[in-house]
Image 1: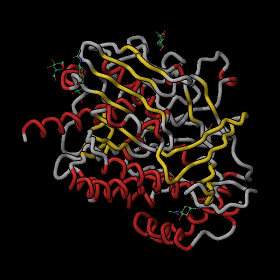
Image 2 (image 1 turned 180 degrees about the vertical axis):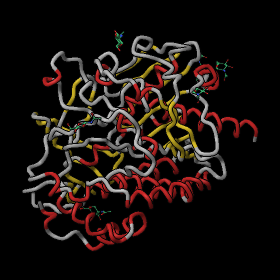
Image 3 (image 1 turned 60 degrees about the vertical axis):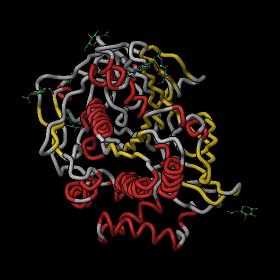
Length: 445
Ligand SMILES: *[C@@H]1O[C@H](CO)[C@@H](O)[C@H](O)[C@H]1NC(C)=O
Ligand SMILES: *[C@@H]1O[C@H](CO)[C@@H](O)[C@H](O)[C@H]1NC(C)=O
Ligand SMILES: *[C@@H]1O[C@H](CO)[C@@H](O)[C@H](O)[C@H]1NC(C)=O
Ligand SMILES: *[C@@H]1O[C@H](CO)[C@@H](O)[C@H](O)[C@H]1NC(C)=O
Ligand SMILES: *[C@@H]1O[C@H](CO)[C@@H](O)[C@H](O)[C@H]1NC(C)=O
Ligand SMILES: *[C@@H]1O[C@H](CO)[C@@H](O)[C@H](O)[C@H]1NC(C)=O
């Protein structure tokens, strides 16, 4: 790939800045190596009921090509420190930090099951698909120094009367919204009122509460032409100077926005700016400049937050941080699995370097936007599920994506999306906490 050539000086500077900020300099070498030689562009993303998967780019031995993907505590320690004492605490202004804490065993189990909720995607319905161990259902997230109330569907629906929500992003939001629909279905069952051709964007309505929940498919947030080439390959033309109008055109309709970027940024893509190709992420043989996935993600975040802070419409905007996968013994395309049955202990795993850089970008851009937003009434909140989720390698479907009597014939493991019920339910517990607290503050001020 062209990246065998040099990254631009400005890029080197940018990368260096992150590394020094988050990882310390010893990590620099390994990471630059990764950026230059990585071909970890592949990822699967389920859209609707069909799974689309990209095979890896040509590359040799995984561990040789991904030296920095080895699990290591070193970068984590810094990140954890940052999480515990720095940024995250700041953004909550003295309130309890819901995002630092621990998973503790709890025998009460999930508030819904495969039998009581009809919204669970068959690909994440681990119970029905025969996952034999159920220990992963008996953990609760306990923030240090405060309690996280279990999801209260009645309270939530009452507070959300006449409101509308949009979740803007990729299939991880489908996963989260299905969890939310299940949690709420204890009080009211939503009715699907809209879907696009591919069922990627969908809308549900709770008539007794006049509440609308929309899932808006915009995996890059940016304008993109995505063509499926067959054999699970995509041709992606990504416009770094324009947002995806799938979401911007309906932004004004919603009272609550939850948004995020994700694994799509790891895929091969051609980058455009001002109607000109300026480079790419992983496009060997195309004679284009390798700019990296953090380049496009930074642009996406910057532009999306700019749109939000300059818009006259001021919904409550919740930005959800990076969610990582837990493949072990290989990557998703090379036999990787996730067969753990318990959470990691604190410090045992900190995420891969790419994950940390992507989350770092999110925090940086979020903070910039929050500072700007203070002046013009923009309401921004962070749903920082990165750390609590990385501790849950046991929460993915793995081979229980689908029921097949012969386990060896089951499709590839899914170590990215989450079983329902499962740890992702906690994201909604926290989301509820954030949103209702914001509501209290607004009504008391
Ligand atoms: C388990 O979780 C439930 C609901 O969140 C809570 O009421 C209960 O106190 C927890 N039990 C223990 C032993 O922590
Ligand atoms: C839920 O999963 C159990 C196995 O854990 C299975 O016996 C049951 O049939 C499933 N329920 C539905 C409605 O599929
Ligand atoms: C919801 O909207 C209806 C109709 O506009 C109105 O009568 C009602 O007071 C609203 N309820 C709340 C809680 O805003
Ligand atoms: C539902 O909520 C919308 C938005 O607040 C409001 O305009 C509408 O009147 C409400 N409808 C009912 C039936 O309450
Ligand atoms: C965009 O391209 C046009 C024509 O190629 C050029 O005149 C203009 O200066 C460019 N704008 C930016 C912001 O680069
Ligand atoms: C997970 O799979 C690996 C590789 O097959 C095996 O060595 C390990 O014991 C398994 N772990 C569990 C908890 O089953």
